[in-house]
Length: 428
Ligand code: LLP
Image 1 (cartoon, rainbow, N blue to C red):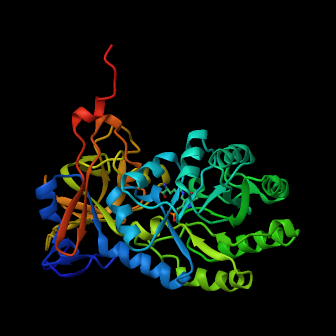
Image 2: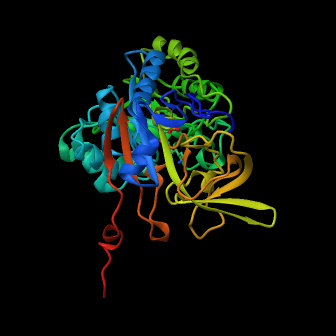
Image 3: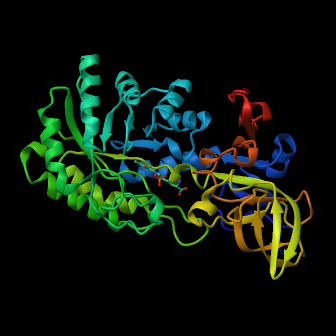
């Protein structure tokens, strides 16, 4: 970074709530360097304002009648779940553990959908007794479990059938879910029999269809193609539409990660809503990344620099165990200094963590100013699939997490202790 310490938006951030003020990166009203002073590093820092703004955008696009079911897997911190509930969100779950989180946060479960390609009996039973909006059925082997749980509770279970429309989502292969070669949903040419099975079961009610296509989608087309294919299927026989009142178009709304445009959610809504209205089907959306991705950064402290051959490395204290996305999906997260260094020369470095894997990098070939030990960097757009995918690999403690709201700061997860790392291990 060259020139005088400046104020203004943070380059590469998708949120105006991360900005420089007097050369210091702030989250809303709070200087990030002060947070590291208090809570240590690495540190996840979240902006409440960004999350609220994103919910509003989705609501404006899809209207008041839409159910916004936040995909808990993106960031499952209890305080984040509470904040999104206060904004009127329901939840999209994929495991019994995520349901336990809602119970722990004392959140209602009547606006909750439950997907997941393989469900265990205890998960189905727990979810049926919680009284969800509906289940997203992905495989016919779930149906007997759901039916038995409904019979035991003496209450029919509402199900939406997750169809796999074989649509190209144009995203990373590991996060594409709507193609034949993906394990998710029921292929349309097999769905007839699954519908028949649901309709014949006194404890199951077909209330909708679901078509989550993948994550980090940047264009509207796949959503339109999926709805086309679902409607063509539904129009094939009246039993496929009787009683149906929801269309769950999934999540997948892409953010910019500092390059290109985010998905325009209003454009998705404009393309789909008129056709849903024609059938009086209510939209359900399951955004994860779009609500929380740009709302978080991972702050890390510089440990040192080194050169090897023609490579220059910047060693930092965060690693692939804190943020898996670069290693797993070759994801590019912008990385910026937390305190600007006016006049410092820029050079190209690989930003790497201390974990013993060559795949342990946060960013490659990044242009950054020369750093000293203790200087702080922020890895941007790390609010989604950051902390929620963190692990203890190399016996590293998972990071602390802080939620900023204006001037207010709340520690929403303490840094793990070493005792927690091995407390469940049995020492023979
Ligand atoms: N609904 C269902 C059924 C899902 O499986 C997912 C994500 C979502 C909604 C939310 O998708 P989103 O709006 O966040 O794109 N770990 C990967 C992303 C995996 C997404 C898995 N399913 C990443 O870091 O890119």
